[in-house]
Structures are given as structure tokens and as C-alpha cells.
Length: 119
Image 1 (cartoon, rainbow, N blue to C red):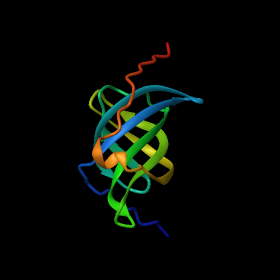
Image 2: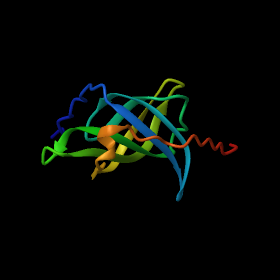
Image 3: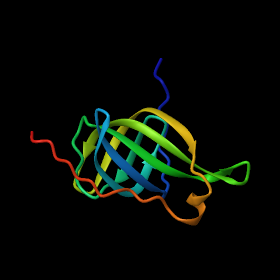
């Protein structure tokens, strides 16, 4: 019996991504979600991401917890395909986190860090 495949949903939500090198954070960037499902996420990128590399995505959740607390979903996975404009990851796990009151007033900023591993 074939398993039914879930259709990805197209949304226009901002995303922050971090390439993970063990316990260190490598390249970071921002983009927009192109489509998302429980199995994968496709999003725009500032540059090509290395296939096979672990990545963490942080996406602002559009619904407040208890009508007052901003949330985000953090998705962990590996890059399965990438171009210089977008990437797709296979979702390994995800978790919801609260963002705190400041998230309503200003979007989070990530430090500009670039790390290239010779290959």
C-alpha cells in the first residue's frame, strides 16, 4: 500500500537560516519560505548552501500563544538541493519556541558571519 504524500503549502514567511558545523554556527542568512510541509522546506537564500550540510531554520509563527506571546518554529534538517537563489531541506525535527516581548517590537538580528570550509 502506497503512503499518501502530503502536498507542500506555499506561504510567504520570513526565515533566518544557520549552517551548523558541529556545535559552531557557520554561514547565516535570511530568506523567504517558498513552500513547507512536515517533510521538507524550500526557501530563498542569499547564496548557495552546501548539499548535505545541517541547517537550522527559524520562522516567525503567525499565531500568538495565549493571544499575547509571539512564537517561532525552529526546524532542523539537512540541505538536499541548492542553487544560488534557493535551497530545500529534509526536515529531521522541529520545535516551537517563544520569542519574548521584544520580538513584537523589532525583528531579531543575526550577526554577519561567513565561514567557508575548503572542499
